[in-house]
Image (cartoon, rainbow, N blue to C red; front, top):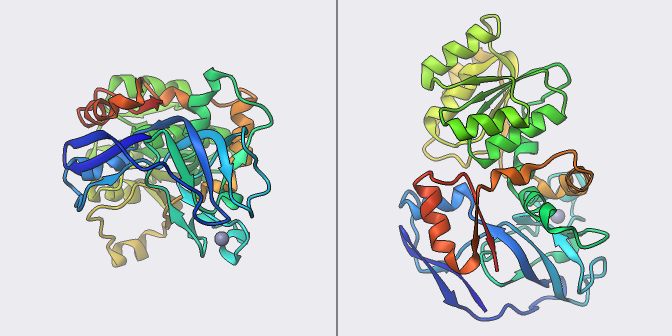
Length: 338
Ligand SMILES: [Zn+2]
């Protein structure tokens, strides 16, 4: 089979790789129906994370089950499945508590931009749809495997409640999905922070009520103006830089909450400032598996359409162009089809 391999910053190649095989009885192998490039894939692509030895890439996937190990009984070959970027057995104590992305047997997916993918912990990770979904639903189901699940978690971690005011920091795919989540969870006012016209438009379509294009302390001042001077009930931090985290923490009101899902890069939180802010803070890799059945239902019923974050579709063999387009911000998120 063939798949994406990163060799160095800016150097992603589509190469022949070994076909994945069942190596443990809890594995499955799926044939990729769609995969994509994640904002977090851009960290090594941009040289902001070390690449190390050349290695495969990709952690978002939907596919058709090809083969299952002996202990995988709830999905069978031929079924359409959605999984999460963090695999989980769905039975350990952390999984039972709803924190599947801290599963004691967790393995992060990292080989999904390929024709076939081995899924560890397949028995606890994959969720099959009753039927093969129509092609127009595939982008949204793919979004559920990471960006929508992560945006959902950001909104829950920020404790978005009916009637709340939510601020979304970051206008990438996760931030835009965070807008969908805030709306679904009943936020009355959703303020999206974005300075890019196409992304502002999509945020409004997804349910944002206000757009703030200022950044940093100017952005915070604007949020305060819009929230009676105190800040928002809930803030979704969907970037992961020192600036975006500061912006998020300063945008929350006393007693408000920040959900942070951007993978932190050189983020430091001032303990004294946090102490006196009365702001609650929770983040981490989203336990997407917990939300999969619900989010899949919302997609299949047409309630949400997070697949709109994909504004570029490429054949899988042009994966390098997907990285380039996202790096140059010509694309919010690139969908790849074998
Ligand atoms: Zn577990």
